[in-house]
Length: 389
Image (cartoon, rainbow, N blue to C red; front, side):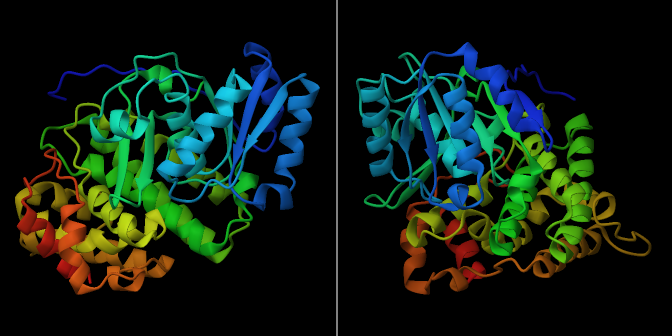
């Protein structure tokens, strides 16, 4: 590993089918006022809401609620949550849900005591918090984002057609604790499950497809990808297979808790493209990533050929005999494409509502990053988006 880096991850995890019991260990560490944040009615229908509220009451907490967190949390919803948390004088923000709920809670946590407009400060200027941060805890019910163990937060502004993620620099913004019970994920519809699986896979790819040095992070990434592929096939055959779903949940956490990014420049252009598509369509995040991935990877493959060849051989088991490096690399991308199709992922942006006359505006909404194998221009973005149709 040739790079210089620091590593710190303070989030405490409780994993397993009795993990929620450990919420009793964490709550006494915080003040009386808890803001409970969740999506729509699913956690009330499956009983998780009642379990969490019972534990909060047992620990003598005063509860305020922010409900209705949408899959792509909006800036308007952020402002609503800030107001509720301020009025309740929140000592802890408790997310019960998937990555969007966890992301949203981190955005609220850095904004409650902020005197500036949080959208402008954190998602336009990408400033870091200078105010007191409200601690966050998570009870995870859907996997994919890794938000339970990182400092990332994605917020959508429909007025400006921007969906922006800010990975905050201060590890204190990471959740203080996260509770991961794989059983909580078993009731997810298949569409949401496979979207989450691809989100996990692409998180690894975004970090893997950068750099050329002999990097331990790449070996870890390959192992995580192989585990995810294996478990994903089991899960789509039997969504109630606890072992497969537990492995998927654990892989999701390690895919984006900063471990496999160490020593890497990282790419993240698939996410920038996917988030721009999502800002214009409000489509499910994992599906927007899937719809742009194959065109993007084919486009950059010539610039990172050795890594794409390694990906083909080490992850997909492509036979190298009698083939050029390019042929091997393309076979790897084809194997990845077949797996995506087997899962039932959306493979084209047109299936998400994108039309050719939207391409230019989506390209303008795409933030260009520099960590991958090719520095993109606006014209490159347009070319990939056209191929994604």
